[in-house]
Amino acid sequence: YPKNNYIFYSKGHEIRYVNKTNYDDHGLILLEDQTDKVTYMGYSVYNYYYYLVVCTEKGKLIFYDVRDMAKEPAIVSQFDLGGRGVACKELDNINLNTVQDQY
Image (tube, rainbow, N blue to C red; front, side):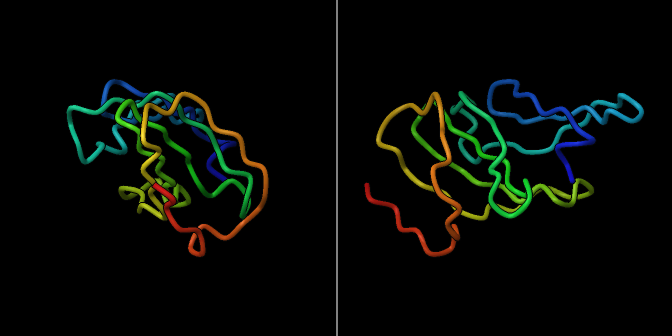
């Protein structure tokens, strides 16, 4: 799984990773809004750490599928938090495809 092989970090609106096997540095994701910035990243434990959870300065909560590092990860779900996201805590193992944005 990705959590065993990669270190993720952000640089403004870009999410990058370092491959821990050979320590190569790679660009991975650019936020759609290039004026936005990543404020939080973590893994969702739902579905075996397949999802990278990202919060942004402009209030987006985005779940990316990071199983295949050879291509840009797909957005699984995206929500508008109504304000800057600085932390995230998973409380239940719900299917993201069944959740609706409440804002």
